[in-house]
Length: 104
Image (cartoon, rainbow, N blue to C red; front, side, top):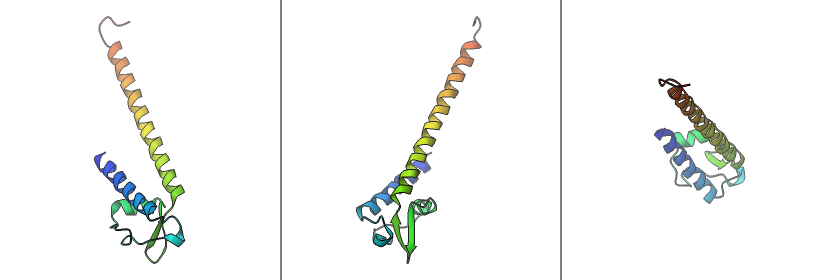
């Protein structure tokens, strides 16, 4: 959980760097060095999700639509996990209530 949180924070920092540089099209693509970034695991995960696109020559740009899509997907997953935990807690509560002596 901590690792994924750190990964998301690093990815957000990378995306902010591309936004600040206005590198959101193939024509405005930049290298990591131009943005003061060092490609690492967070960088390559964004590349694998097509959030960072490479038109060539080691230059990348931010695909804003794919970044928004990835964020929406992460929010849906988080909500599903929270809902699952709440259902599990509810079932445990009901099971605990029913297993007491004298329960209806």
